[in-house]
Length: 72
Image (cartoon, rainbow, N blue to C red; front, side):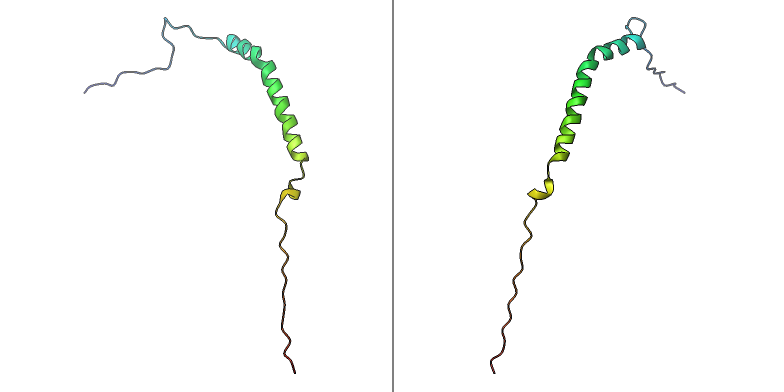
């Protein structure tokens, strides 16, 4: 019976693995841009909420009915 090769997700001995601290500091370097983006999205969201969207809807069509009265 032939065995299947063992697979692993561990990094190879010759590959460099980033530590949590390195990844965290790299993320912190980008954090001002993340904060600016979040702030702009926050402002845009509330600006869109302030627009009276119901005024842009279709005008309700008026229905006109007529009836004929028989002549006597």
